[in-house]
Amino acid sequence: MTIQSEVKNGVGIIWLDRPRSLNALDPPMIEAIEGAFLSFDADPKIKRILVRSRSDRAFCAGGDLKAIRELCLEGRYDAALRFFAAEYRLNLAISRASKPYVSIVDGLCMGGGLGLTMHGGYSIATERSLFSMPETQIGFIPDVGASYVLPRLQPGLGRWIALTGSRMTGMEAVAAGLATHFIHSESLPHLTAVLTDPTVGIEYALRETVSSRDCGSGDLPSQRTLAHFELSSLDGIMKSLAADHDATSKKSLALLRAASGNSCRAAVRLLDAGANDSLESCLRRELTVASTAIRHPDFIEGVRAILVDKDRLPVWQDRIADGPIGKQVSA
Image (tube, rainbow, N blue to C red; front, side):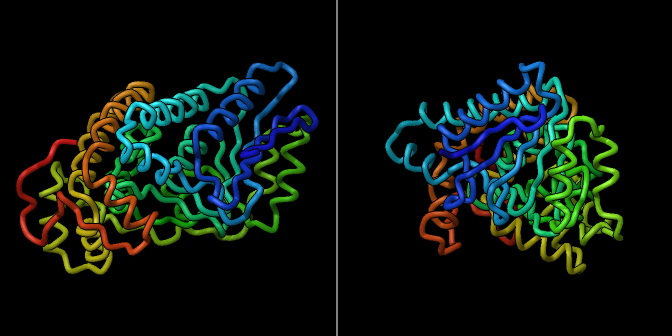
């Protein structure tokens, strides 16, 4: 079993339970989550839906891209695209939930994991949370509706998240707008108890249990750094960062230079297109771009370097060089 579902006092609970793979989503897991979610959402006796992990190491490490890579190496691109289509269908369904949807993100939340949390009404982070959208570092694209959510954050921030793949703490995720509340992990049992009491209103439950300590905003980039990411082109962003000797800008530049150029250009185009579009349209566009991205050599190489061999030394066909970026490669 990759998930467990239960009903407690009129609250539908979905437990992610694939710990050895850090709850990485594969087709059976996506199908199981979707089935449980739709059943709870349609049941008038269910008052709210709660999603969390059985492990405190990870909420969800994203899609099982190692399995997708194997499908691509076998030339089974249609099967790979069916995986993404099912995942994006689940993301859209969550956004349309007819009752409160609460996710508790205690641990790693990457890529596809964000699709399970950022489209719901309530996303609770802890001091053990780590949020990221690292797709450009593995030769893929920011997806699961990222092209809808990220352009609606603080100017420049969505581009920074999508292009650099930087990790954010729970506090930083709340400050960024990717999570709605912060709670210390020691209070999770109490929070779960309150959330599974349907006589307690959800807003009241969160006010009573979220941390009263100073959570701060973490260490998100300054507006000085984010201003670079507001520029219209990837080439312009790179040149502007290279001329800035601020430490955060230098770190962002290094992360960009380590990423796939093909993925970064696709990310810029997707976020620009999604800024004034619906989530449904953004997901449809992401599926179209994903169908090309998985056929690009950078995807096979990126997943190999980061997730398979783990040498973290991808040899990109479309590398972002130290100087001008040069010829663009379609994504």
